[in-house]
Image 1: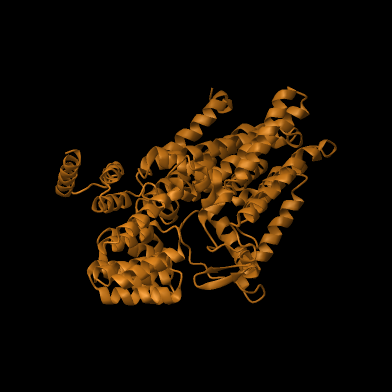
Image 2 (image 1 turned 90 degrees about the vertical axis):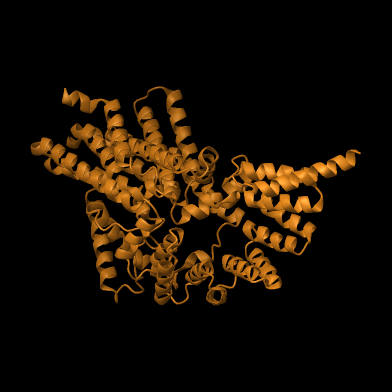
Length: 614
């Protein structure tokens, strides 16, 4: 009975989905974090699902990912439940695909006669369960914007699965039409994956590797991989023609105040990969923002040298295992190939993030199940099932507990501060969380600590300036904004916030100058246009005020404050019809007019209307 249940495909799918749903049942109210605000909550490009051009322009090589975000925004705005539900569905679907991919792999010519093939069903089932349960996956699921990672992995695995299915159908001379459809869908999904996240550029190489590993040499279909190899041009051509990446600047980035060259990044990644391996096998001490010092030389940095030699040993082992233990060898190469775009020579601002392991997890789970059953399957298959079941339970409990940390900004960044006490960004973000809680004094302490760690941290000066502004300490606020702008002369937010202080002090010339500087630094800064409009309106320059409000609305059609302010300007200008249209629009966006002011405005309108009619 139990054996029959294990072999039932629906049982496997339901088990994976049910387990994942239980693990992530405590995430539906987890708040936005870090890049969620810039990419979702405050991103005008995704607020109109019909404006495909704006969605594409925001991040051309991630158009599909941001279209999904625009769809989510269209359905849910910033209500958290719908966002987390979407992320969970993507994660469950990806876990099911991981299960299917491993089942398909056991059906390939290279695996059919292998002793381990008798364990295909439990290997696939436990792979899917570990994939959905592993605590490292929490960052890709609970951190909303990292749906980019999980969604790209979904398309990546779907393409791999359909390619494998098409090759298996070809190998067995089955329905030609179904074979063609699977193959075409696989190519199509590879393109979709590449417009979801740039790291999917490894997919064509993965398919070539899959051919070499699992199909007979005499039957290797080189022509079948050509369309995938042509897809390699998709990402670089998109970057080139949209000017979304400066290829010269890709050779080095700035991290923690220091420039990282390609060589420094590569040497650092040698150590990072070992941290990733440790997190996969022993997922304790998880952290959103690791404090990772760069490695600048190989011979002079013992941890980097040791990592390099160890990785060479692992790759040598994988090559030696190619003939007798193909699954084990493939799992190792899968892991390294999936990591390659973000852990090689192309510098990325943050050298380590747990979500980068999401797709590479397939290599890990395949290694765990294949090595365990290969070594001990003959004698201890039942014990292996018990062991893997316990492992899934432990991972599930750890994931559920880790999700508690993601509850809100304070719980998350307080955890980071404890684990990375020398990381300036951790104090900055916890300071922001204190501000949102109204604990301004504690926020200032955290911002000051961030500045002490990183003296050229413009964002920390700007945030402390904002905290001083809230306290009414305008002098200290201006000094901090001045320092932020000195460090970063194109810091639009600092100009805007300093302009607000000058506006509060009645220094309208300086205020309008700062708002204009903010707009020059960021032409899409709709709040700065609105703020400059307020100054023009204060000076009774109503036409200029309306132009600025209109520009803010053009950039962000959902910016209710600009509609309200433009309504007032239209009223003062005598454009009553436009005024009340804007009032209706602002109120539909949740920005309410003062009832008494609205009553007076309607009275003036009615008197003027009566006078005109007489």
